[in-house]
Length: 246
Image 1 (cartoon, helix red, strand yellow):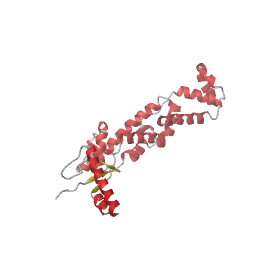
Image 2 (image 1 turned 30 degrees about the vertical axis):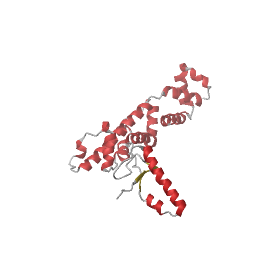
Image 3 (image 1 turned 135 degrees about the vertical axis):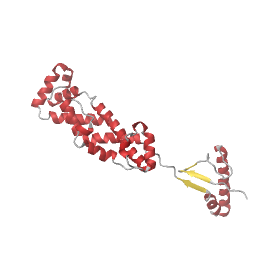
Image 4 (image 1 turned 60 degrees about the vertical axis):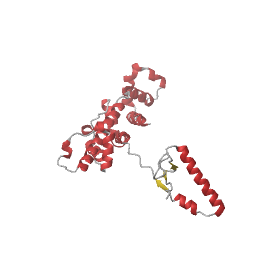
């Protein structure tokens, strides 16, 4: 008995480069399309003749509908996004304070930020992963792989070990991205930003920005006499930091 061909629909497209018969494959897509076209033409003629959907229903019964698999999570992009979120949502005020007080921000989240270690573990490290997710994460972020076996010491379940390693590996990746962000933030020209803020606060002309010899004097004057100076400086720094993600 002749085997009727079967068809596979991937997403909303007919993927005719895939097997359409149990016994043969049509890798020539043009040939495969001609076969499908001839069958559709035959069905159209039959329907015009008898106005019956039986032939169409039988034909459609050979189709198998498949949704394309979900693309894997891009953990590298997730790490970049989470590092940015830490800066924007949790550490922005302290970063700005450090820029104003010391001229640069610290990348040591554990020691130089209030509850930095707790925030990092709660929002980044303390996540659960299924085995397939852990395997995908470890594959993508292999250069950040956690190697401290003491973190899963005493654990005998292989899947659980992989999940723990994945959690700390992701933490390593986010930490690395965070250090890069802090380094970029520290590249801001604080002297010029202070100077520009002072000029505006004192109501001077933009042309005065070219007078670098008066920079320290004008900044000091603004700090002493302009009540809005520090607030304006903070707003300017927050704006500059946010510009890194625009």
